[in-house]
Image (cartoon, rainbow, N blue to C red; front, side, top):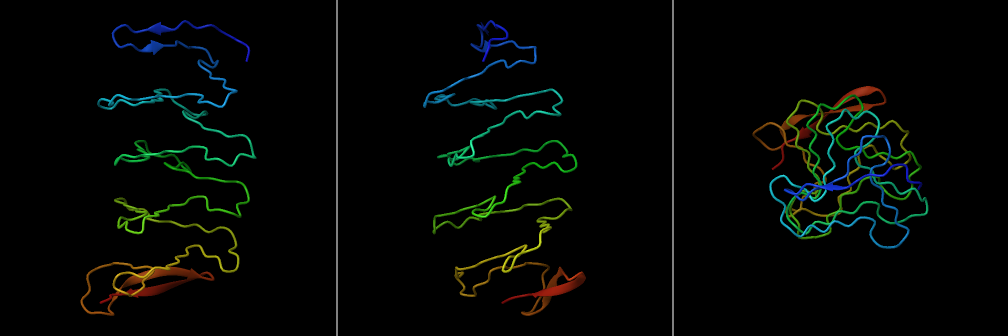
Length: 213
């Protein structure tokens, strides 16, 4: 890449921070690595204080076009993982804090593909330890919207469902329940707790679910 501008690095003597001033629309800092080593390696040996981060991407401007952070693999023959997070600690592996009110059709987490996927699912949660007792996937909704909303726009193929639960394991009580719905408190086994709304061929049907022993 041709050098378009030259910049002077400056260092804050009190904090040790190195500054690279940039006010134009050109790239301020670029790493061109044709080798097989790291393009960028951050070795954080010290315990970060307060709200400090080993890597911080910060913007206080109104962003309407570009993204603050992007990882792109443009080679269609690549088979490796694009982004890999390994956490040996007990804190969050990935935390998304959506403080702003999302605009229409915007999401705190959006997983999208416009290709014909025939081999693997877009999202997978895997717990491989047989002794684990914590939930694999949990939705905690304090609002008034749907806790889980599935919109099936495509015509389902034979043996495919908008929601499919395959339970090959057996719970400790031996009942083998693949799904359980807990509603209001009702005395007596077999009492109706509530109803699930099911749309069958355009007809709305109410399917009851019951209290169990």
